Image (cartoon, rainbow, N blue to C red; front, top):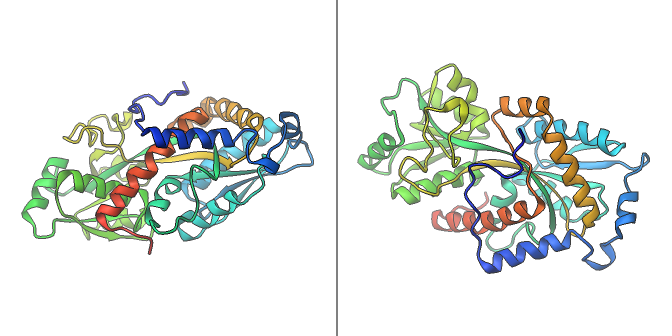
Length: 345
């Protein structure tokens, strides 16, 4: 069954100031922002056969965000009775597509299918953010999450996270680890772990998850951190070994693999998410309708099976839950990036 409350996720703890900011952002999805606002009746009128909804994916076609978007868009078009087109606007680590939605009209006709970069990108631009994730967007729903996973070649003598950290402490500069790129959510998740473990590790960024996995398979790096969908085929083929997953509970198909939290780091969480947003000021009636339709779509067994096969945990959240998640994640990753001196390339 669909999870309307993300099972296994710890309660979000946000400061009073951040919670207030999230609440203001959520209020902005209703009848705020002056001329951009519409009445509920006017808002629902935009969904007519002559109107087209754009779902912006801030990455190239074929990636996991694009796959999730296309699965959702097809069913959403049927529910709304009008076209829902995917617009891939890649570049600058997702910033180009995300910023374009921030500037779009709040009429219910422009949506953003965002990944974890939505909350990590601002952390890489401490002097001038490319967009404001709370103030400029109306949260609709968290869609799916996928744990980050630490993997080593199957032939490696390292069999646990404790082994990895112990070996790293014996090496000057630690071991080297591959990620899908500098400053992405997986990289920051790794840095959070190394900070908590008080070990030094050498980061080796690759241009995507696939080459990072291939580097681990070839023994070019000691380990790799990637989102689970990228590693799943190799874990199933037993050419890679998983040491730990970054989610707060174990993944069903990797039941023998502990979480990082279980491995000595309570409260640790590093996972890739996909979520749906609209521009700030989008009327509450539109947000409510979209949330209801997304919840229904994610409850379809065939959709759930497809997403789970890709390595995703299917979640349908309230707009308020997503707002709180964003309010928690942005300062968390900002602190990690600052301590590790990670900035945008």
